[in-house]
Image (cartoon, rainbow, N blue to C red; front, side, top):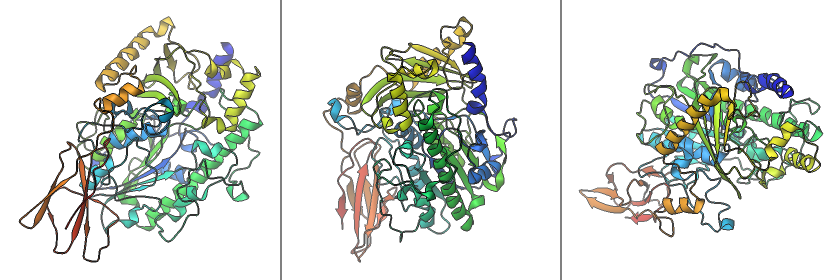
Length: 579
């Protein structure tokens, strides 16, 4: 125990250290924001607090460090899951994944092997992706280019979602919401053979439709690339601090080098996008977000609901360097993004959204707790729920009879994971490293995340923390009831609930087109469905982008219209053509 205490304090600066900015509460002034600001999201994958603005100086990130010096750092952002697809579902809807059937990773894969059909998350009728809501408000919305929402995006979701998507394709003067996703930091970037894939460096060519990627569409895991000197951005002989739950040897050191080398490349790509923004004269009319889609990529990080799996750094640069160089310590969850985005664009958050706006004219009270869930990952299932305040985290294990470690084939391609398993089998792991491989786990866990940032010392049975245990346990019960999450529901029962006990996924009914007084009116009998349309002129050219139907349409003589309806979680309707 003395050894563990010493270890906790020695690693405190790595696990919790943040930028030496103002510790005072950030003073926001929404009157300084543009009326209709552009919104730019720079989203990297599998990202812990491995960058200098958050206390880790292992690798220089000049572009992110500059962004932080001109903006606000948020050290307490948490994903709703330790993996991407459920977390992205929360981001785009403002709803907890386990409230809409998006909690399993992924809903459309590893189901056949389990005797289950592929399915999609089914939010309540009328739930729209945040991008569609902004399109309705006149924004140009582009996504470059990962989706992974646990449901098929309606055609109305984006003006463009592709490796070419860019704000530069909008109408002149149109405000935009643009996402750029950086895949180079993904878990698969630790696999061998190591090297940057060309598609991962697409941001240097973003918006350039004349550029043709040799491996466009290839996943990082399957697109093998040989390591070259162009991929070496930091010295290979750098000595890295290794988390205590991993083995500090040559194998892990190489994975740590890959992790930080990937971050250095990601920073260069961030810089390329920011340069484009400045070149276009848009910097001071744009709110820039940088964040990760969940915590780190290493074993015992990704997929788990320890802070190493949930906590990810966020930087926001507001126009004219508003609040520059400050730190906002409030707790923020991914479900807060959608309502905050509406608030920043002077739109009231939707009643169905389960998050809180943390900035803008509709800012709400700061949250007291964040919540997270872990269920099926690929072919392996667990059931875990967590609630955390600013210091303590409570974890409830619904399958205590099984251990934390799940033999996930994809993760076992990481050399450091292979090394852990090898040394486990040889009996060479220390007590800290063995924890993950215990045969079972307690029903309840409580961690002091300030003293014990890697969550190694369970305080659930400690009498001094009984009141905190009860407080957070009661809060979890309230949250589960509030979002209608039944952790004991099997995945087959979940599918039955999502499909209203039908044998297959519902289909959005075909739209009905009526013509009156020279205008077309379009309706759909499926409650909450979005309706998209394309106008085809006499030349027969079909536009790339689907417009959102909101009011009667004038159709000129000789022109055609294509119409499709789609409720999220349902299959889209057939496409109707009208001339």
